[in-house]
Each structure stands twice: as C-alpha cells, then as structure tokens.
Length: 225
Length: 225
Image 1 (cartoon, each protein chain N blue to C red):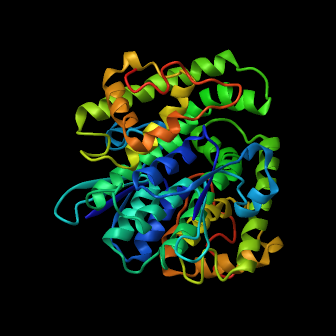
Image 2 (cartoon, rainbow over the protein chains, first blue to last red; image 1 turned 180 degrees about the vertical axis):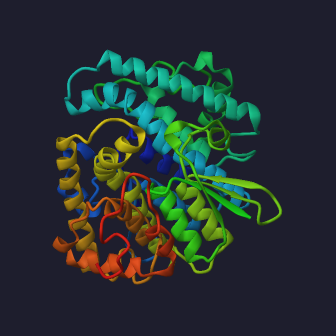
Image 3 (cartoon, chains in turn purple, blue; image 1 turned 90 degrees about the vertical axis):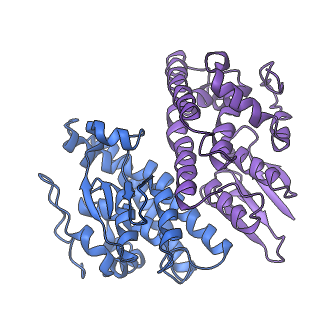
C-alpha cells in the first residue's frame, strides 16, 4: 500500500501524482492542509510540507519526503516507464529544468499568483494585492516566453521523450490554469505542448480536482481548450 | 577537462567543489559574480546562477547546470566513492536532507544572514539590517538544534556513511562560519560533526578561500577550533 499526503492545488504534490499515475502505481490520496500544521503530519515530516509518500509495498514501511526525493525514489523502485530517459547529460538537463520550475518559477510566479489568489483565500489571509498580481502575471509571461523558446529550439522540453521536466512544468502551470491565470492564446507553442500533456491518462486525476469555494476556470478540465 | 563556474562563498557552488574533490576529479575553477549578470555566463545558463560545470572529459562538450543536477550527474558518471550510499530509501533520505538545506535552510537562514552580511557588502547594497540579522540568527539556532537532534537520534546525518546530505549541510554552514556566524560552542554535537567534515582532504580548497574586503573569522580555517 502507498499513501500520498498532498494538497490538491500544490505543484509539488501534483508532480508526484503525475509520476505515480504515469508508472501505473496504485496509491491512496490523503489531503493535508500544511498551513494548519497538523501534529500527526509534522511527526511524519518536520518541515511540515507536502508531498510525503508512505510506502509499505516492499514489506517494509518507508516514509519518503519531498518531491525531488520521492521522484528519484520512484524512478529507482519503479523504473518503467522511465521518466529520466537518455544518458547522464540528458538526465542532467531534465533535472535542471525541474529545478528551474521548482525554484525559479515557484519564486517568481507562484509566490505571487498562487499566494495571492489561492493561499490567501484558503488561509483567510485577506484579499489579493493587485500590485503583486500584476508582477506575478508579468513574470509568468516571461516564463511562458522562455518555455516557448525551449519548445522551438529543441524537440520537447528536455528532449524528444516525456520526462520529469514536462511533469514539473505541467504541474506548476496546471495550478495557475485552475485559476484561469495562463494566457494560453498568446503562447500557441506552449498551449499545444500543454494540450498533449493534458491528454495523457495520468493527468485525469488532476483535472477532477475541485477546491471548496474556489471553482476551476471554465476550460480547466477541457482537453480541447 | 572540467571547468566549474562558481562564486566562492555560495553554498551551492561549494557543494559541487566538495563532491568533485571527494571523487578526486580534476577541474579548474572560474569565478563568476552572478549579480553582474555577465553575458557569456548568461549564454551558458539563462537563470544566471552558479554553479555550472563544463565537462568535455568524455570527448563531448557538456554543460551541466544547477547544483542538484550536477551532483546527480557526478554520481552517475563517477560513481566511486559513492555519495548516495544504500538502497532507494537511504538515498531518498539523503536527498530529503539536501533539499532541506537547499530550500528551507537557504530561505530561513541564508536569505537573512548571507544576504545582510555578505551579499549586501559585495554588491554595494548598503549596510546590514540589525532586525534581519537577529531573525536570521534565531532561525540558525533552530536549524542547529534540528541538526543536533538528527545527529543524536541516528548514526550520521543521513546514515552511517558520508553522503550528499553531509556535504550540503557543511557547504551551507561553511559560508556562515566564514562570517563567524555559527555559535558552535552552544551545539557541541554539531561542532564535532563539522570538525570531522572539515578534516576531510576535500574540504581544504574551501578553507583557503579569501574574499577581497571580507576576512574569514579567526577560526575559519582552523581544524581544531
């Protein structure tokens, strides 16, 4: 049995759901509100952050913590389908892009848009700050430009095959898309890439998410948006 | 030939220097001031951040970017000595701790103390803010408490062998130690662990660093501090 502690609209948890589903690994979801710092969850992970994977499938109980560690653990324990294909250089490029989204995109886009429009309402922290929203939207356009450039200059984000880089990018963008914050029509190349990713069976679970009080954008679950 | 683009007192670059030296890989250092956003460096890495490793040792020129990607690349291409020992669960635990230092410690300690006492003077951003310094020092004591607890409850940070977790922790703490910011005497267990790490031959290069205008603390290079 595998149990994933997650928060539905948190990009790091979403990456692990996508990986588990790509690898057809069966698991149960346990939703956590990390900002409430629940004691039982803090006992599992002292940082208090999702995702955490509890895995006793091998007859030994293992607690695997933090998205990057879980992703590498799943690559090692369930290598097929491989989400870090190619040789060391190709894998390094996929890992570089994952880090780009997990640190740079997270700090420059999520810290503005997800914080203002998602974290503030669910945590009762007041209404969104219009200036922060403007800055976040500007940063998002810069990142979409960069993704468009990557897709134009190479075959796929980190190579011709689907990798953890696609999963990281799609997981982050999917949260913003839930909020209707991605200007897809201004970035056709990125839109086509996201349409292909969104059509993968592993994406279905994410498209069914509904947060109480915050409805998804009209096209969020639409495969032909 | 391998060329590492780094900034001497940047914890992510320091991790890669430690890994290269642990693995006895020969390389040349190229110092970069990332905040000046040098064009040639931006052409290598669009994020503008160190470290970047240029590697043409295998007859093909490869540019490997970002500390985690470089660390995994070096583990794959030069597996001995292994710095992610054990099985998938042990490796996941080492990777979790690396992430703890690279994201949590970096955001809660470096963003205060290294920013105020190191980045501000070298980038001409004014004098340190006493309130931010106080907060950073408080966070550092909390993290040292946590490291002490880890060392008490298990054999080593991520297990009985020296791993990327020790390297990440030591690289981050070494920058603060250069500035004389680590209250070692209040954390005897952590001090003993750092003394053992500091005595490793791979650590020598770091202890020779001298930043123009900012002298290291009196005990920085002292193995018996």
